[in-house]
Length: 275
Picture 1 (cartoon, rainbow, N blue to C red):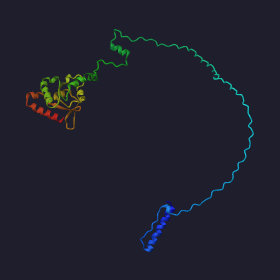
Picture 2 (picture 1 turned 120 degrees about the vertical axis):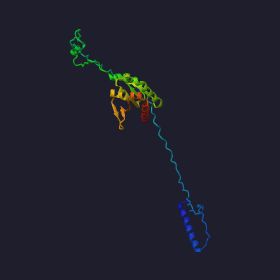
Picture 3 (picture 1 turned 90 degrees about the vertical axis):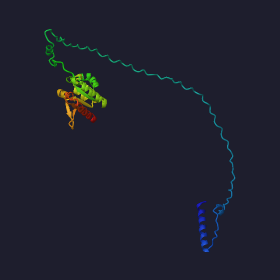
Picture 4 (picture 1 turned 60 degrees about the vertical axis):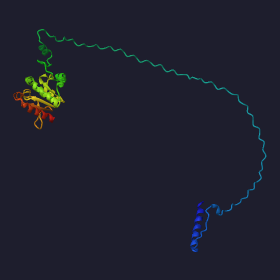
């Protein structure tokens, strides 16, 4: 349905609605939207055109075509396959350099090395021939070499708790061994170390550099005789490097009065519980 037909249907509907309103009727005539119901314009009949008579002109005879004699075929001239190569000009060799006579080598005059006569001592010989060298009349101690050589042996003797003594306290060694054994059974591994047996040189440096030590016990007499570099923390407790240090009173007191051993053990237990 084209737009014109749709407009026509809409116009008819509006007209019917108007008529129903004027006549008060409910009957509605229907209009079919099918395109075949609309009147169509009659087709204009056109008569067939009259054909004019066709006249065919007479064919004229064409003149005969001139005959052309074929030309004989000529063979192309053969060209050489390879072109002549131009030989390059020969390269002249470079002139050889003229030999240069080497300059003579100047030799230094030979000097005789200093000799040690039988009348001279080694010290006199060195001072006369090598005055810039410094001589030591006594062999120097090499603490660093000793600490490297014997350090592993000294570290093997040390435990988490270390009891120190020296040769002047050999009389009290059994008493100190009992203390070390009791600490190992109840708290942590401990060892009794004679500072005279450490071979690495600086004993106190060996102790302070050992990281596994947690507590050091040493008699007052040993500390006063050797004077190690002691420190103290904010609470006033003694330190040997960074390790806590418990100073033991005179060991002869525990032989005179065995009841004092209990107070010593309580002091050691209190120190170990803090650490």
